[in-house]
Length: 250
Image: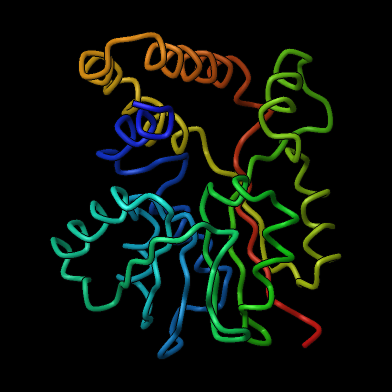
C-alpha cells in the first residue's frame, strides 16, 4: 500500500480522524446562531467518517453535504447515517477541499473540524467565503497555541508539521482580515485529544501493523506515537481552537 492507503486503513474504522467531541460540536453550534433556524444548507468539509456531520444532522433542521476526498470514509459515514436514521438529511460528495463546486452564496454554513489544515487556515478562509450567503456561518477547528510561549521541542515539532499553527489572537485577526466577524472561540479539552482520538488510535496499532507488515506502516505508527507522547507532555500549550464566525461585507 502507498501512504494514503495505509492512513485510510488505520483511520477508516475510527469514530474520529482528529481531536473533537460531540459536546464541542454542540458548543460551537450554540455560538453559531444556527440552532432553531429552518431549512439550512450546510457543507461539512473534510468530514471523515462523519462525527460532526451526524451531530449537525441530528440537531439542526438542515440538509448537509458531507465532503471528503476519501470514498472509504464516506462509505462509513453512509452506514452510520443509516444506523442513526439520518440518511435523508445527508448527501455525501467525494471532492478535494480545493475543488469544491458549490454555487456562490448558496450555503448557510460551512463546518470543518480538524481538516482546514489540509488547505491551510488562511487559504481556506479565503477560498470558502464565496460559498456562504451574506451572514453565513463558518465554523472550523485548527491547531492553536494556547500560550504566547511554549517549550522549544514542541514549537519545533508543530511548526515543522503545520507552519500555520498560531495563537487564537492571530487566527481571529486572520478571520477579520478575510471578511468574517468572529462569533466565538473555544479550545478543545484534553479529553477531545486523548479519550476521543489518541487512545482509540493506539488501540488500533497492533491490528494495523499485523495487516500491513513492513517499514511504511511502522513509520506511520512511530510518527503517531511521537505526536502522542508530545501531547501527553505538553498539553497545556497546544490544542485545536474552534473558531465560529459570520461572513460580513456582502
